[in-house]
Amino acid sequence: MRHPDVDQAGVTPDVDVIIVGAGFAGLYALYRFRKLGLRVRAFEAGSGIGGTWFWNRYPGARCDVDSLEYSYSFSDDLQQEWDWPDRFSTQADILRYIHHVADRFDLRRDIQLDTRVQSAAFDASGNLWRITTAEGQTTTARFCVMATGNLSLPRVPDFAGLESFKGDWHHTGRWPNRPVDFTGRRVGVIGTGSSGIQLIPIIAQQASELIVFQRTANFTLPARNRALSADERDRHKTRYGFWRAEAQNTPFGIAGHPAPTKNALDDTAEARLAKFEEKWRNGGSISFLYSYKDLLTSKAANDTAAEFVRGKIRSTVKDPATAELLVPKDHPIGARRLCLDTGYYETFNRPNVKLVDTKSAPIVAITETGVQTAAATYALDTIVFATGFDAITGALADIDIRGRDGLTLRQKWAHGPRTYLGLMTAGFPNLFIVTGPGSPSVKANMVCAIEQHLNWIAGCVAMLDARGSRTIEPDADAETRWIEHVNETADATLYPLAESWYTGANVPGKPRVFMPYVGGYHRYKAICEEVVRDGYRGFVISGLPTLAV
Image: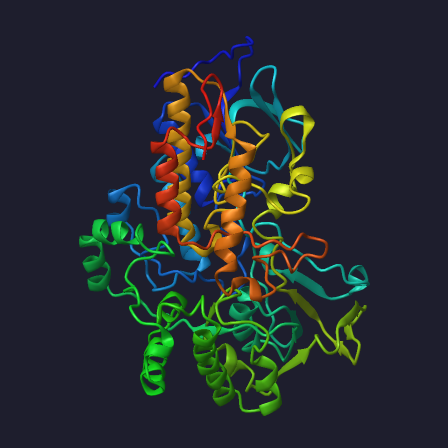
């Protein structure tokens, strides 16, 4: 393809595209833009590639999407040659896959590791992005692609006294690249989201004493993880094309789960119980949410599923008081992230495990010797923070991004993120966001969503070069209408009824805005394709008229 090396103002960019991040999104971006014949460079803050799967090395870390789905689809040779050992892959196996992909497609030569991007500024005089690293290196590019990830900026709570703690402490999102031995130690885990739920059963088997500090009880379902047989893998591979096509037409970008045809209350109580039991036995979260059509839109329907899981918790946990603390009562099932576990509830039957409710007695300080709540003090040798991330927007806000006239992204998003299709934001030309706020992002199979986004972005860049155009950005009115659509879509569901990281509720001072698009991956993809067919409706392209939305 044709791509001008020299800008209209006579400025020569160092590269055509700068990519920030080298996880699943960054690697596929390198692959796609190279296919266009563009000069590309990726900056990665970590000392290795993998993004989320490089940093989240904590014991028990596993994907909650089936391995055969949570993988790239762009190369059938890759699909055929790679063998996933388990139904739900471990962090180590996913990272091994990512390294295989990087080597197979020779991607490492364009990745600069140990490089944290500090700022990205648009230079209107040259229609270039100027990227500056923490070390002071500056690189210019025509396009900037933020592949920074949705769950990549860990949040360590600002507890008083943390610096005085004389034991060891770790965050699940920045786990050390070495084994951590909990044998014989008194361990405290703060947080019972997905990371904590995966980690707690592992630590309980090693620690002499485990104190779990829980503020909010979360719903979690049994994963029923198992080894995949060679025959099972081979059968899937023979129909990989079919499964990938099917995934494109589903709300979550995940194939293999027949869409439900009934509403929950259309079934008898006995039939619903049998359905939920079957899903519970089979494991997995998507399958369970697919029990009925209206589990995420009708409170009455959702109550039937929530009560089923509450009953499972009460029948599993032997101590009634502990069981009641573990039973979620303040949000619909699925409105927060629906977790998967292996033996989580059973862990609280162990004599060395104690559950502490920090909603009734909040943590007030970390002391030299442990954790102090409003009700008691707990002596600990090790503290693990499973407190999650500044999700979806945190990694973007961590970079000083400046668009036209010096407008910062932090200023523009001060009251909540504003994007068009979750792909771009008005006032920031040629800045693309992979799985950004206002896209399905975390409410879809991330690898599937990443490929869809980058295929769209690559097509957009190719279009600009074919037309001889220099910049593209959303029209402000189109952006406003998209945000209204995202909000209206969320309001038609039960998602807003829960405080969660989907809304930024876990970060003090963060605007409470429901960030993902929950109209379904398949509907979102169709909208993106329609926008392109309509001549990039809602975008302003230099030298071309804007088409109204």
